[in-house]
Length: 426
Image 1: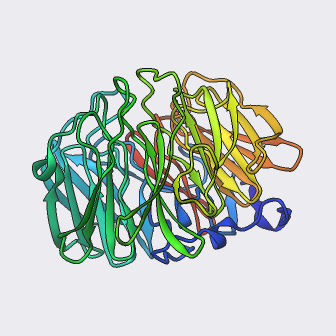
Image 2: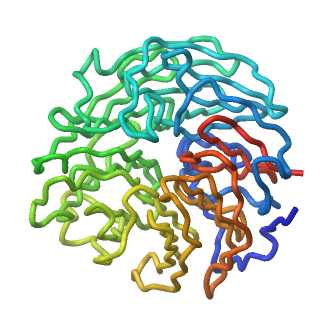
């Protein structure tokens, strides 16, 4: 089985972002605490990871999941947490690293998915090593202990109004400073709400309402917490605006608009922002634009002052880009990979992945110099990233639809397919 090691990575180009951008909640780098991994970056800890595999080859184990979902698992220690429908209820299952089920919990009737790849369990779980927070299209937010004990459960739609998104809920919870933060960006009342991790009580709630044309006020993106200028900031993308709030108090700090100057309708956003302590990169206009925003010394309305660059004709509709060192890596829905300088927006290189039957819905992840890109039809492309381009190493067919982002962890690869959870590795 081929493997790529981080030893060959040029440190000056692929700097260890997972160290720089650790979440303000201090998640350990050897775990995968939420959708985008350590620091929310989509970049794995250094290690030696598998690159050639299939649904049968180099599979340590695979288990059948209780239902269909597109959420990415969370990992802490020897436990793997997966949200999934269970007998038409919202559910979460905990597995160990041998593929054995430890516990499962049902949390009430699900709200079924509309999209062919969707379900009521699209949001990914989040954990800090003590709490496991899950969120569903039904509005249910629940917190469990690592042993599966229920700590609290609330329904934010019962508290604040029904979901008005046209499609299936996508935003995942974010944990920071003893809080679970949920972004609700939809038609009508939109807001950020923070729940105390120990009790489930509302710590703060901030309106996040902007006047937009039809559907352009709707967002499926997940916020990102990053330390900027010594402060933990919740960076949120949607409704034609990028905003920053104090992650502890919810206080609005800054906002950046101007992403939809002609007030186009139907410009909902799916891809989340890629964020580090300097720059946020956002894709918008249904994948037709990409922009870089300077987050340093941001305060008030930064629309005119902090936009670094805009790239018309370039973007992704669904996959979230990632920032690795000085560069942005963007995977488009059709399978193009673009490398840009994060400060100037200048293109470093562009490569096209081999064509297939599906689009790219999963977001790309980096592990050392390996880039993992999962296609809808179940093929996971692996390429070696260099300063000059992307060298395709393998096309790995998992023989079932793959919408969730793969997880490179501790020298292995965790893959959530439509029907099974796989652990790949020696």
